[in-house]
Length: 422
Ligand SMILES: C[S@@+](CC[C@H](N)C(=O)[O-])C[C@H]1O[C@@H](n2cnc3c(N)ncnc32)[C@H](O)[C@@H]1O
Image 1 (cartoon, protein in one colour):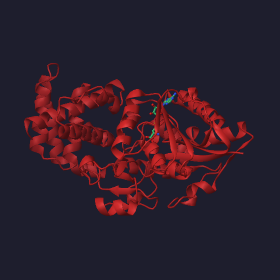
Image 2 (cartoon, helix red, strand yellow):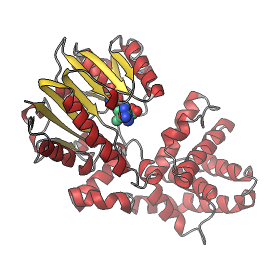
Image 3 (cartoon, rainbow, N blue to C red):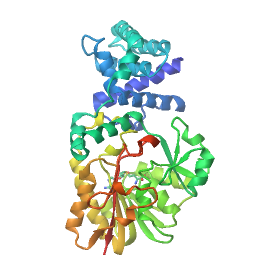
């Protein structure tokens, strides 16, 4: 690989050091400018290499174990992990090993280990792939696996882990007719109306991007707005709106949308997205709790653990330890109560989270129904096209899991429920 290839791999190692050593999310590290010196294509590749390494980390460590007498320093370990994942997934040894050795030679604290890196990766190249293929699908760390096994059982958990290891395809939401979009981008029209295209495609190069005919949104994430089913002219509030996937769905349906989020830079993305798609909404940079008024319909996409998105964000279980989930659960409860208070009589609220934890979904709705005597859950509303009635839960919400639609490429984990104020 070229010199820029070496820099790309070095950046991928830096990303791994930050996630695994400093407990930072990839989005934070990249958002703070870590890849700015790379060209856009190299930036995407560095990110992809880091993501692939995190997905296969357990296997890489097992392959490496027998070639190492003791665990080396974090950066050396990450150079070896990246090299192992690339080699075991068919990367050419020449480029992978040479770049790994060069990265270590240029590291002033670790340069003496370049011989070790060379020797270990040569062995991995010779024997690693066969072993890689025999190893089990990587499991989630215990702190997260335990509550999920408790919620779904061990067998489902293996299915969820298989979906995480497989990664996620690219789903689009059409501004207009999804069938026509599927033809134009040569994608698959999913039962719920999203259009799935194969991964590895450059988003902005897909037909209709500049014209704003669609936006990227996982099929599961597109369901809350479909369930809210807003009508032209309805007064709709989109709480926790950025970066605006659901805002665009609500605006495309003709509603009079107010979108609220307290993060100014994420709100700037909502503005850009609306501009590209030619849709309109009133944007409010502010706290959910400061929002007043009366609405026909409200969508509350509350901040959460994001454990439903680990197919796309395999850094999450390594960067987090669950310690802040309690605060998020408290916030969700307060936001639900505030949102219910903003509904007109007869108004409806869709509460949703991209979480796999029942405490951020099923339990929130059960408890809200116990607190609010004039609120009922609407099960019928969940059964929009393509939704399997088996996904409806006991308290009347919709539980989506990454192992659903496995043959089609899965979906993000999500929870949503429709609450009506009587
Ligand atoms: C799950 S994301 C929303 C995704 C968005 N609905 C979409 O479909 O593109 C949660 C959002 O909640 C916002 N948020 C967190 N706390 C907030 C608060 N107190 N007030 C307003 N927004 C908040 C975050 O900035 C974040 O953008």
